[in-house]
Length: 241
Image: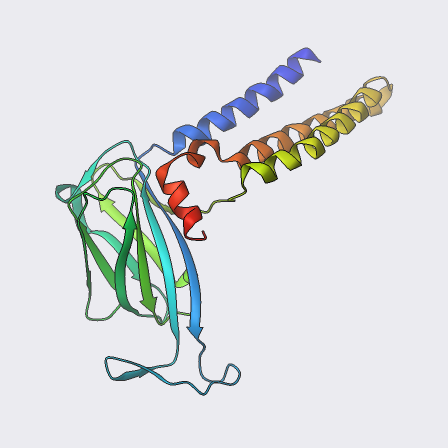
């Protein structure tokens, strides 16, 4: 019994450790939030026409994209290759304009160039320190934020990953704590009752324990402790991500 409980706890700690260390394996992460302003023709009543550079467009969306250097390495323009840091439009959508809004590092310099097809916006910068984030506003003709992706080709960066935050405040998390404790106590009581049974019922105590481990793990993740006190997390909450 004790060996099994220790095995479960070791697995839980291993998962948490892997999650934490995985954040520093040369990743660039990004969050994307989209608001559609104009819907396509034929999708309900639409009596507004909008022009971009004197050309009519059927769909107009405005997205905010927050890009984070989650690696432990400073990125410079000399580290970039094969297009470097890019925002891409997938599907039929096109990028119309990209504006830099805010950064956790005011000393940086940003510039964006959009290719002739409107599919890729190249972001040029001086440097990006570890843990820094920068916020862009993107006007595009796509219908959702899923049609925008970020890609970073740079020395030391092995992956560019879309992420999201739960964004609960401390008060909400503390209100959930008594309910969590009650659930753990209830499941533990069920497990102890099953331990006293004979035959195959005795082995069913494993399932309440596994459920407790899963609940503890999910509750710990909602606190978002590795990110909560970082500059990019505060910037994300400020902009509604």
